Length: 392
Image (cartoon, rainbow, N blue to C red; front, side, top):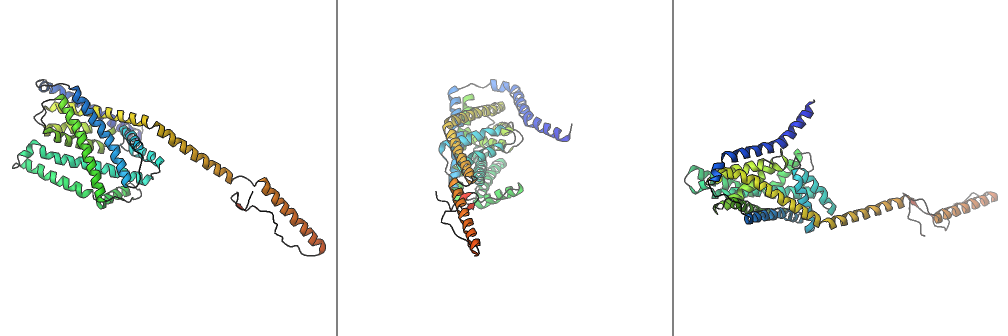
């Protein structure tokens, strides 16, 4: 077996084996800590579960709305239905290993609406960078609600405050168009791609980032309701903590290119942060919530993708019909350019030739040199087969 085949199989085992190992590890942790779970009031609240599911659905819809806003600020206005359908369908492709297929899919689909590939790529970069940055920003703010922060005189409390302030400042500075554009073009040069011009103002980027903060708030509220559905005694102070945990967990899952959609990495980050930030709750509850949040968010994605696709079938047929019409017109234009001269043109040319030949014969019999005579008959000028001088 060659080395390339071994490397390929190793990648497959890591991509799909790692999530299985994480699942087994979570199951072992829940089993070892089951006594702690059973000693507390543990129940399933279907109403809160339904509200949590609604929160994840609203988060999925907000993703498409924010991307539509980014495109609009770049000068390309897409219909609302088309924006949601393209975004949601391409987002579900994230579960293919590599975390890049959704980028390619969206760039190809949005091109059908007249958006150049460079602008489509720029919109996705702005969307992803602001999304990841605001996820870290929200997590940094949530550190202020961790239990150790209340002891401001302790070293841990000062560390949390300093880290939160530095993270917030770094996000605000890094989102400036000059810095963001420079980092973007640096990454494109490393990938051997053409640089792009980031035609966005700082206030536009800040407004987009504000929308992302609202989106993370909605998602974090859904995650908090998920915790509350399983553990009714969860304090209200856990709400901002849940918002920050879910935002940073999503960031970690996205930037991990090893497994599809960060499977395993997001869950591990959520469980670890949950045990650190909320020590009053059983540690095993974090593992259960990490897996449950993945399940509920995936079901929300499936619902949104299905509704968006079914709602956009008429629009898809319309786009295909317009494309077919344009292709037909192009083929007819190419065929008309390749057609030979029409019968009227051929007749005019033959009459002109016969008249010229008769005059030359008369000139020769009279002993005069032949003269070039211009006929009154219309002559077709041949330029690539076209008849510009012809008038039917």
